[in-house]
Length: 236
Image (tube, rainbow, N blue to C red; front, top):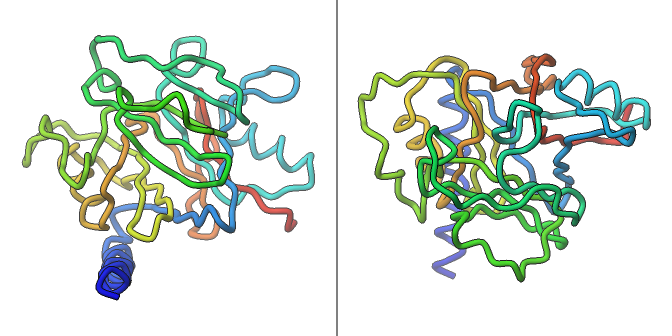
């Protein structure tokens, strides 16, 4: 009973927080029990989607409507995913746990994934189990929130400002995708996920970030990405 009360309180708290912060962030919440999150990279002719507009055109040919899209992680010069990418149960690129420079390698980095049972999760990349039955996965970095704590490398008041987007798991196990409407530092961005009750959240990218969410009059269809996260409906 106590656990149920705490979960309900947490849901109410993040709902109110989202309403208050609408002017700073664009966000989309997905209940994976009712909607399917799909990670896209190439079409059936093996052409990279690259932009949200190209993805939108492609799904509409299949009589679907794109209701949400966001760039889904970092990528190499040829637009191939950096780190792990699993598409419809098939591993396209392997997990990257090596050391390097840049945000991706600011350890710990992480993996956002959806299981075959449509359960969402975010975990430290170095702790990802190879026994998981994963349908979709994308690796990025750094982790923003780790077991309820802001990444220790982030500094409050940092002047490292940029547009940023990321993904977190809410207390009711729904997925929240968030992009800042203006430049923000890592600490404040991570703190927003934490304030919503996310125990784990993952940074997806920065300057290049784009979000397509027409129901909120936020329509960005350009881009030159690797992986794109999308949610569609059969309604036209």
